[in-house]
Length: 334
Image 1 (tube, helix red, strand yellow):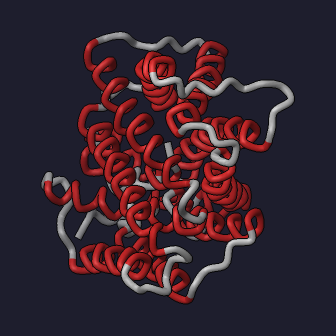
Image 2 (image 1 turned 135 degrees about the vertical axis):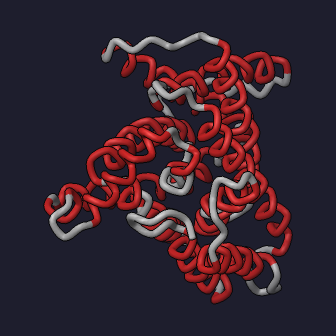
């Protein structure tokens, strides 16, 4: 599960039950005031910065994981399996069991498909062909598409500013794929569109979670079930297709990258939820900005990526789009 998915928490607020919605609004309002949680405690900003930098690194790690020639299905299998095992340990230490009722099983399977298997495979296919910086910008479309989906489902009011944000997001993608001088290789254009398709899967997952999440559900438990379901569904596929890639010791750079992605997704997810609870969802949603910027910078530091003027313009445009779509503190959509 990516940072841009989690940064849509406040965007999906209207779909939450009344009690959760009121609590989230109160936390968000209190945390945004000068004397609020985020204003009083510098740690909130440090956690937000850490989350953004860590999640931004995952884009470069994804590209790094493909260096050994491993199949995207095999890579995605290990990321899901390791993430599921880590969360099972955390849940067992906290005495939390995995519910197996029909409504939970539905979420596990659907979210496993839309939040892990399909987008993960597409994402790792594209990672070897698109720079980490471009991956970062395209995956940032998740909050924008989530708003569109929420508006279609009539759980979000359409406002001029937020529709303008969606248009800025579309324009940002156009700046990536339209100019001939934008991408280093024009053959990468279809892969940019494939990453956007992966982002659409994440968007569908967000909406399903918001609409079907049981009131008393623990998000950590849902993610654990999602990763377990994804692992179980991918197990026969990796063996039948011969795409299983054993992790042998000592690990090479791709192996460490796989471990890093699994660890980041679990640790950062927990910290994000902690930030939502104690600093408010509006404050926590600002992680998306740091992720987008740091993802581009990590690509430059690790791979020496250089970007055209069009990509830098696309990055700026996407940041504007995110700022316009994000709901204002203490106010409903519109």
